[in-house]
Image 1 (spheres, helix red, strand yellow):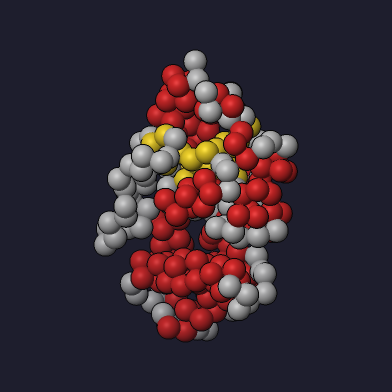
Image 2: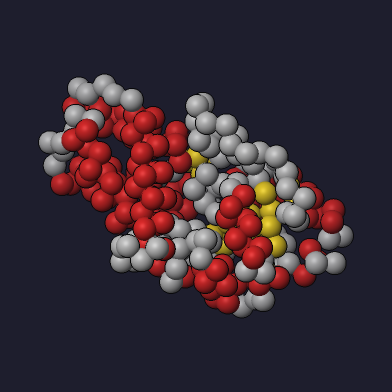
Length: 241
């Protein structure tokens, strides 16, 4: 019966909806080719993501840094990484465009058709630490059919702070238990559950690249585990029929 109460599905985006790593590596390879530089672009992408983005969010949440958008966090780390990879001479306009690589991430193959199917029964929205402009540009390019776009700058907090999840439910006009977070990351889902949301786990085994083995095992506490968005739609249809 609890799943029948769900009215909105809110989605983690980086890794869950879009393949950030391959997309960013492609743009870094193109930048390196323009300057005749060969490097481990996978390592660059990983540092940009894990040290710059996730590390920056942790510092904001601990109060060590003021709140800033994901675009600002990305740019801060980009300027640190470029000299380390032989691209320190890149001019401002190119740096700004490269920072927008995160606006141009490719969706997983199931994301667009799966979202369209889920949209027939539920309100679908992002609930992301990305900023709204980034998420809107990404959706426009990738054809992601959101009903609403919620990012950390609109929510007023970064996940995994409970305020982020509760603000998402409030802005959509639902009680927390009427909202289900869909994510590829267990910590995100557990934080959402602690705030009263439902949880759907979508493992993405290729998200972190060939050298990382993510935790893909189902968790009994999650409401649903599905291989992809199309299977999620089917399971929700079956369980709420």
